[in-house]
Amino acid sequence: MPTITADDGCPLHVEISGRETGPTLMLSNSLGTDLHMWDDQAAEFARHFRLIRYDRRGHGRSGAPAGPYSFTRFGRDILAILDALKIQKTHWCGLSMGGMDGQWLGAHAADRVDKLVLANTNFYYADKTPWDERIRFVREKGLKALVGPNMERWFTKDFRARAPQVIARMTEMFISTNPDGYIACVEAIRDMDFRATNPGIANPTLVIVGKHDPATPPSAGEAIASQIKGARLVTLDAAHISNIEQPRAFTDAVLDFLQ
Image 1 (cartoon, rainbow, N blue to C red):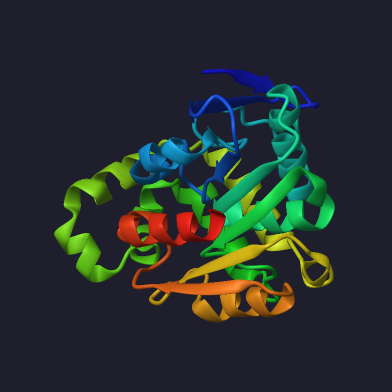
Image 2: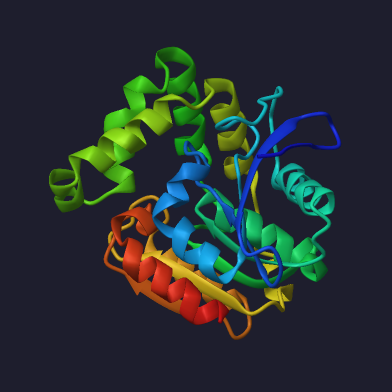
């Protein structure tokens, strides 16, 4: 699978599967995960699309240059991938940070994306304190010390109890993240503000929320859907990483919207 170099020299790990021709779908990950967070969806999506998955900078097998990062920086990485693959336009599906990427693309690169799926995401944090506290915590204690609270944000109590192998896999994915890359991404989330730009998004948009999501609560997704004219809203019986907690329902919602 290719490594694509961003305009600042950062290597970006990309995996491509599915159809050789026809529509393209690009998936974008949440904070503290890599492209394998989409493994439950990849085979089905690849039946319908040329599927592109990638590790954002600071995560997985991509580079982790010094931060802070920004969503403009992430957007330029995405465009570098599309340019290198000679893809003019793609559908977009992003969860959490990936949904933030999608909002940036809809506002600043609308000609490069077709339909947008924005899952379990937010558009602005008025209170920066929790993010500053998380940065300080990770610097002092590392990501392993954050596993417990993180899994509680990501998945409901019932799911954690009935799917220990999934929790183990996601824990390993989380603690394998580069701590400096993680912190640089947290800084980008802390400082993002799409309040002024979201109303200008004209791409067909689906917003997915998790009924039990404490990280990006349903009210955040509802606000995004109200900002983007014509946006649809779907609620899943899940916490934050809804595509893993409710894989079939998530896949069906995305395919129903994109096709």
